[in-house]
Amino acid sequence: MIRLTQLRKMFGERVAVDALDLHVPRGEIFGLLGHNGAGKSTTIGMLLGQVWPTAGELRVCGHDVTRDRAQALAKVGAIFETPVFYDYLSGWRNLEILAGYTAPTPPARIREVVAWVGLTGREQSKVRTYSHGMRARLALAQALLPGPELLILDEPTNGLDPEGIHEMRETIRRLHAELGLTILLSSHLLSEVEQLCGRIAVLNQGRKVFDGTLDEARHGQSWVRLKTNDFAAAVRELRAAGLITADRDGEFIALTPDGAVADVVRRLVGLGFPVHEIAPEKQTLEDFYLSLMRRPEGESAK
Amino acid sequence: MFFTQLKHELWKLFGKKRTYIGFGVFLLAPNAVVLMFRFSNAANGIRRTLEGGGYPVADFITAETIATQVVIPVAYLLLPLYVALVGGDLVAKETEDGTLRMILARPVSRLRLLTLKWLAGLIFSLMLSVCLGAFGLAFASLWFPQGGLFAVQVELGGSGGFSVLAPSDGLWSYALAHVLLASKAISVMSLAFLFSCFNMKPAAATILALSVLFANAILMSIPWFADYKGWFITHHLNLWQWVFLQPTPWTRIVESLCLLVGYNVTFFVVGAAAFQVRDIKS
Image (cartoon, each protein chain N blue to C red):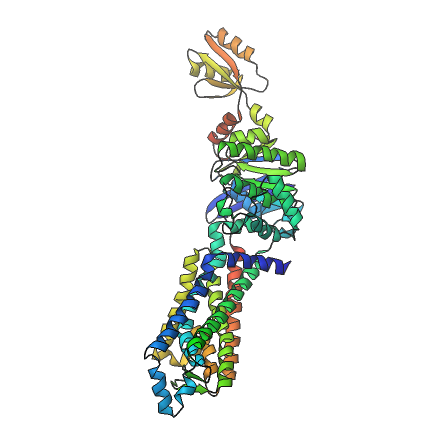
């Protein structure tokens, strides 16, 4: 559904996105993670033909966005952080206007979508009277009007209260389950991505540092908590024995792919290190994300 | 599809209160000036000029004459302001508000979007010019009789005389002048639209457009530039007043009209080129 090849964007001398390869298969909820300024919104801007890439290729729904934008975006809906509308017009009129840029939209279709997002009864009110949650629903309605196959959501829960965030999350699930949409979700809310997405890509300073499933993210590197008298000395010995690949925070070690906790314990006890505690650490997405952010520039997890 | 999208652009434009500022002022200002002519000695200058030329004053202190006197300063100062305000808003306000990103998430081309917006601006400019003429004449007709038209001649080679037109010619010239006034309004709107296509605030686009006009007008008023006035857009923007000249310089009017069309095309093409290569970001 989306295929980016060696995508690069520079703003003057600053590299916003660098050598980005990304593939989002049809029917997936794909999470695009990264801190503010990591290049998520620039990537989405390029996907929608709003930002011109400096180099690389973008294909959406099989069409090159740069050369054939109209075809590429014909079946695409998008929601941006803090959705904005023509506040002085009614919700209905906003939908008519925005949908009109894609294709003629009969009133029955607008009514159907308004009902789907739960705005029936308020569609004729001016948007300036809408709450934040209602604006989010209207944003969803405008994105759904062209009957999209791909939905691009750029920080869709920004500014929503917890109830609104929950509602948006449930809506995204419904969109995926009921309408079978492919969804690209850009967010820096790890819990949101963790609950919704099957696959993720993580951007850091414009570069992709991870691309894989959530399970791969959680188990990509298993950390083991180790408490002993002299952690630094123990780590030296374990490295020398080829049992661990990394350590962090003075209490975690990362085992080699074929390493086992029992081998570590046997080695340490054999060398006279008392082992007060040793237990595999269950890695959350947050742990994984933070570990990616701490990595030296240019090093990626996958 | 194109006309539906144009209708939508007009909904957006005419849904905003600020779009009506010009219409509101054009309702009030001509009224105030007409009342001043009616209840003060403001018409004495015209009266003296007519008497000096041997014309019957009663035939020319008319609704057409007063409406023309009202419209000239308004068209010179206020009309450019309101059309520049709308022209400067057309693209830059949508960029500033963020609605442009919503639109450009759709499969509409930037060129088509700009064409729609420019056409909406053109319709607004045309309506504002026609309303200015209609309001001026309507209010003047409340206090003055219909009849001939007296108009002070604007320079076209340095003359500063006046014209008197018979009743049938007067009304026709007045109507034609306001159709041509639309060319001025559209050109100023297009100039502001050009700046609006660049990455700048709407107010900056409006101010830049007005600055260009004022700078043109100032340079044109310097005697050294008298021989070069044809190079200034402000010279051609006055073509609507040349309709009142006797004999009417049709060739010059058509020539200036063609030049204004050229200016408009240039403004649009340069604006569209700048807009096309821009990155639209939040």
